[in-house]
Length: 284
Ligand SMILES: [Fe+2]
Image (cartoon, rainbow, N blue to C red):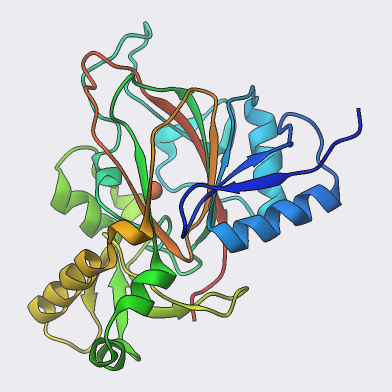
């Protein structure tokens, strides 16, 4: 059957679109992918309706966007694909274990900002979703920058923030810290606080929970500034709150959105996601 091609239905006035007319488990032609990629740049977050998506096809789809990250935290690798990272609260018998698999995701962040080459797309498939909670929320960071007043824009124009995975994990919870080898493999890196999206040319705020301090500023002052900007960024006009259905796929652009997960009852509800992160570029 001839494909009718992707169609995008906006999810909010500002960001996010639901895509219909695409079967992700089938091979995708270049023209279809180009349309999807244009929608990705325009809407920042793409939602695909519930469908079967085998792990191999998810990795194949992710590779269309670029090089797929092999995550440093290899305890999460899934299905024989080091590119796939599974977050699950189910135990070996498939019952909710009561343990949230990654509490770090509950704070607003942008994937891979703790690396020199940061995350481009994150692609998440919902294998098992709880009846309530476990949502994923998005914030438009173009809009967050644009909403800042002129004095803020001037203050932060040339600042650089140091992003550190070890910082964001250990300050939130003491579970599952990085191993010494993981820590050495991913030392802290600095990125501009205001980055220019390499494809749209638009400026956005680039901080989130991995951002620890500001280069050249006393530590506590930089911490306070980061907290203030992270809080200023999140505004109802700039956010999309996604309530998952099993089998949906979300794709978002880490270069211009922050995201977070919401909590759920990990003792009674199952939640399992499969994630790929595509590597982008060094922010400028
Ligand atoms: Fe994330």
